[in-house]
Length: 165
Length: 147
Image (cartoon, rainbow over all chains, first blue to last red; front, side, top):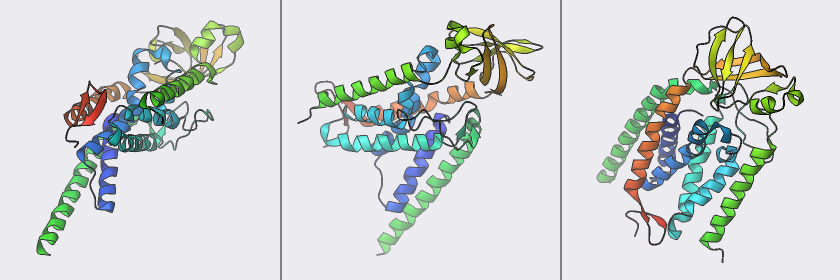
């Protein structure tokens, strides 16, 4: 896994790009649910197997797309009925971003079990060693600042244009 | 009509089944399998360990220590390891009770990665409960400004 700062930075940038393309905004609550989704697969596995290593083979499903989808469904059931579907899609979208970023990692012993439970084949693009992702944190933070600056300028120019019209 | 508790039960059952499947039927051999049943795993390639770290370093290898306390001697001509570092390794198990190293990666930044990952969890946790509240009467999470 890349570290969780990289995951959140990536999901933040992606949602900003979506907002720019669609000219509509995710609310802060939607954004928080996407962030939650983006850290969820690691949050449900890493602390458990670091503290209890003997559980590592049993908690694999929480770090697979199918298992995450079920977990997202379970979490969304905690929300009020009128918000439930939205919560499910937003958290799921976050987990999709998580697995997308994970797929660029390189492991000595194989990659992610994206096809679980149908196959044990491990899949990854293998661009960056998993322990080296931390070195990219400054770059991610710079990207977030750059995207926010651009986004702020666009918002300002759009509101100026609206005032003129 | 499917009720909330039916779906909860369904999802918990599904995830439990998947956990059982991965725990019981995973295809890889881990070090514990080899230690428990050495004769059956002689010559197996082992790739799965439980939080392995480098223990004592010897001229012809090192001792691998798992977090659960199990340790095993690894023979290799690999140099450059430091005691206590996290590693990822691929090795051949020999029933005499040692591993022959095939490939190794020292995970130098792993401990820092674990450390920096704590902050985003705290950040999201604080943000979450600033914008959502748990209604204990109805047992629902709801956005704070939701009409």
